[in-house]
Length: 217
Image 1 (cartoon, one colour):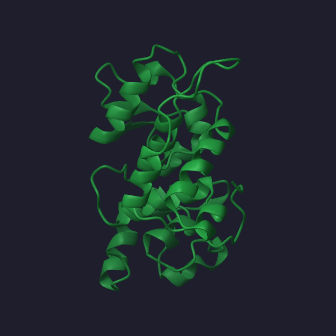
Image 2 (cartoon, rainbow, N blue to C red):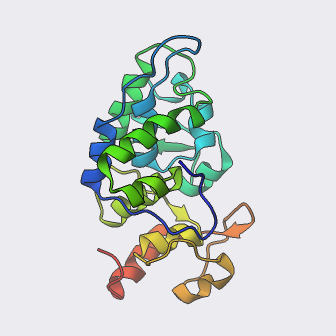
């Protein structure tokens, strides 16, 4: 699996294809030299939430409320994306995180981002055509999440603010990598919030603007 590259042509996958990819994943990695970790849970949580790998790396069992309805975030990028350090989970995302927490580990996923890639590679090969399977990367999980947010599906955590490249996906543009310096083409004013030095755009305003111009579903 290739790591995301700037201006790489994105691989678009449907919801049914993503569900099939998840079904093809093992729930847990096999035991052995490394402690088993939640392969399917980590990838499903990424698709349902858009959380960055850094957030998943440090996510602790006690970051979830006792009933699992809210999650505390620690990584600045995702705090900025969701507009607060505490987010309310969707029912499906809640079930995924509670199932992983039930194992009893202090860290839900740990620093296992690259260890899940071989399984995701294999699952993509089983589900996607060869060209898309070869190009499929972790970035495409986030694109698939944004596609579902754009369509209004309740299973997917809705961000408050997005970057210009993420805004392009929400608007259904053909290419998701947009130089934020040219984001004026959205005819939108950035918020005063920034992530990694780049301005962020309010999701509610983006989707409203897209519907006005029939750019979103």
